[in-house]
Length: 208
Image (cartoon, rainbow, N blue to C red):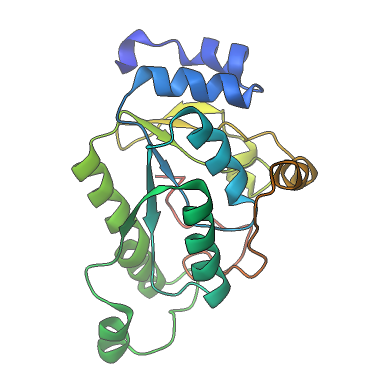
């Protein structure tokens, strides 16, 4: 499929048309997936996509370190949008990891933190790809999130062999807030990702 698609043309024609880009993506692959970490504003992309395909698998790599608000929000938006949520967790529980490796999340930019990120996020995602076999991966990343994402195209070929589609890449926080308000969607205001530590840092999921 990848060789026959002109992704440059798709980016040119649909890169700033979220609904059109979602429709294109879903037409390419009946087994498409969307990932969500249930961070702030994430209800917007979930609503946009499930309006077109209500039963799309919503893959959540639950690292075990989310805030209470994030877990509550994840359940709330899952119920409100009737999401087909698939939870992928590390092969070791948080309790197991902390008993063996200690309770502290390793310091950023160390080999220990790289191993931590691999265990709690990257391996579960590869497992999801292996089990679900999607050709299309829809993500809610935005260009304002990090320096890497500022240089992304809305549609790109990921090194893991799937086409990554970011329909709201060019949306501002204001546009997302207005979308949530317009559609009566909840939000999560207390989010923390230990694999990133800093909102402007990448964990490796998008940069592989």
